[in-house]
Amino acid sequence: MTQRDFLTSGPAPFDTAREVVPVVDFGGQTAQLICRRARDAGVYSVLVAPTITPEQMLAMRPRGIILSGGPSSVYDKGAPTIDPRIFDLGVPVLGICYGLQIAAHLLGGKVSPGDHREFGRAHIGIADRSDLFASIPDKTTVWMSHGDQVVDSANARFEVLASTPTCPFAAVRSVTNTRRFYGVQFHPEVTHTPHGKEILQNFLFNICGYQSTWRMSDFAHTAAERVKKQVGNGHVVCGLSGGVDSSVVAALLHKAIGSQLTCVFVDTGLLRKGERELVESTFRDHFKMDLRVIDAEKQFLGDLVGIVDPQEKRRRIGHCFIDVFKHASRDIKDAHFLAQGTLYPDVIESGHGHAGQSAGIKLHHNVGGLPAELGFQLVEPLRDLFKDEVRKLGEVLGLPDQFIWRHPFPGPGLSVRVLGEVTRPKLDVLRECDEIVLEEIISANLYRQTSQVFAVLLPVQSVGVMGDGRTYDSVVAVRAVETQDFMSADWARLPHEVLATISSRIINEVRGVNRVVYDISSKPPATIEWE
Image 1 (cartoon, rainbow, N blue to C red):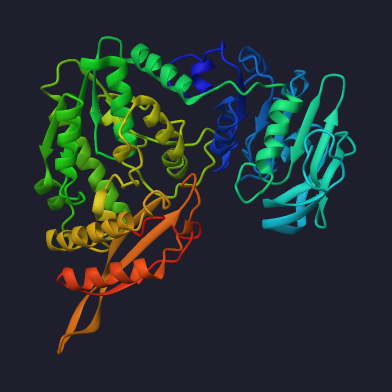
Image 2: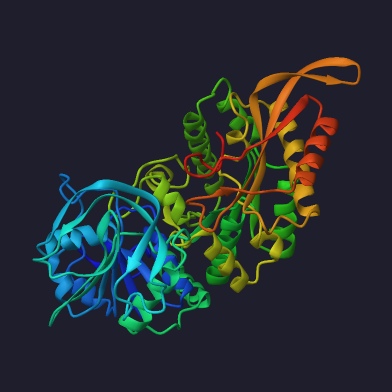
């Protein structure tokens, strides 16, 4: 296995000139969040596969190593593991949840199903505040998500640093002549652990000796160089939607390869109101990019006739994109590459994580399988980033705030917000409703305070009274969420006055709607989109 095989960073070899903390990905849905926390602290981090060898790990010259959580039991057939020699490299190792369990298992400890499964907040008592828990209160709250746990650590030579009433080894330390291992059964990387940030920084700075020197401008430079190396003299086609992800990709590629980039904007008929005009005026007229607009509304809507299943909608739209890009690329000379704004949450939720253990939650037309069908090589410079990191990158690249702070919009467009069969009349209704929602959120200065806000056209009708007449019209749901990473989200507590204005305007201004409801579901168990 080469470095190219186990790093997430794409085709370019790892830059050993930079300090890095490798995060071994055991398939946990917060693995990349660990990387993000390290980067937020100014330490560059990358995901590596559990199959990495000690020699490959040392070649990265790490000051520390982190083992992520994961959905497996250490006793499951085919459960991910790691070469135990990594614990004796003389480099501090932090194991999180499954990372602690696999370390205990490999080092001679015993892991078993706990008497009490712990999911959610738990209260721990800290017994040792000398290093990992320096400046952390003696009692604090953490976020647990585990069934198995360490039950015997004598052979592993673990010292207990913290515990809960049901988890005696909530945090441990094992120090020998060659080993400096720390483990926590909880998740310090999530915001539900109030002092998680400090715990991770204690490991990075106090235990490992990293310096807070990495900045997003470093990523921009490295990503641009990787793109140059990957594409050479070839031409790149970028699918530009106008959202922050594709806009940042276009800006990064324009900076890196200039005239070797052609952006393609597809009018699917599933766009928000005024989207096409905004993209054309910004990227073609202002940034002077080579932008080609394809009117494919008839093709997309034709493929969706009679389709109600959300996964089938995504599948058909994905195939339609393939056809459109095939056609668009025919007259682009040397077009061998396709650039996409794939982010790491897309990768995780599509089941394409390093360890192959992540659950497939939804399909994405821009994750997996496209190169073979399109004849393109994929260029995905944002694949390692979360949404907030993409916005930071956009600022570094000089994109206007109008694009940097745009709320996410799904690749399949409004098709996922028209529940049931998608038709042009339904889309027209939803477009008007969605525009009203956005106008009122912006007017109330809530756009930057919310992460995603939109309207959904439900496949139900209800009785209403308008004037002196009885109506039997459609119901629209309004959805607003707040999140840092889009892996989890909570519903936004919008002021009642704003909700009242939205409801009144939709009912009075949009023909065919007589009822508006507000979604107060969190993710999980719900998803952000309705579909």
